[in-house]
Image 1: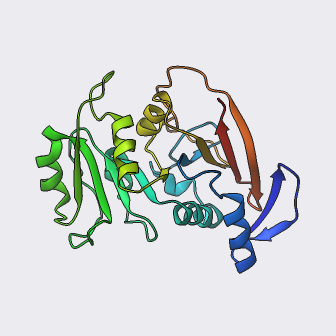
Image 2 (image 1 turned 180 degrees about the vertical axis):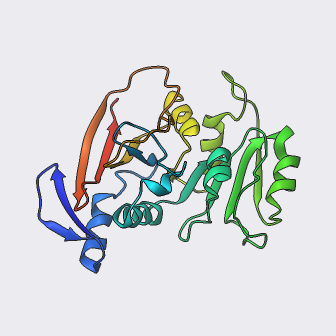
Length: 240
């Protein structure tokens, strides 16, 4: 699992599977301040969020999964939309709680165990969706946070959702999508950074990683890594 740093300064190769490589990844992906929301996702070269199997599994590789583990371990909480839970299944992250944003409350398709420990699952939803969450999640220890509607669109008020997570002590938040939630967070001005893995393939599926953006956003490249397969790993900070 060899990685080479290309930016900010070209560096020596590291083995992401070694103790030294793990320490280097911790340094590469360290948070610049306590409160930080980063999007972490993978895309094909033509900007699609899914590969031949209709999920991100056909875009990822061992190095990408190692970096994903680093990013999760450094964060306080993993945030996903209900669409990703239904499509990708989403096993519970090993090192961080999982927060789920849902408008409908329908979490059918998840792979979360019924006996999950208290504090490991948080669901953020409108009050009207709470009964559907309870019937489709079937995890009694999960916490359900009922939120008001967004002031500018139907569904969850994302600013209120992030504030609620901060109030619980979750300040370093990693959002892993799906694309709809990621785009909405960018539109709401809540995202500090994009961690984007680019898989060296073209996807025939139409599933853009950031759909529905309402304005342009300037980015600053703070890190670029490459592995032996030609997969790229970038950190992009939102300017301003």
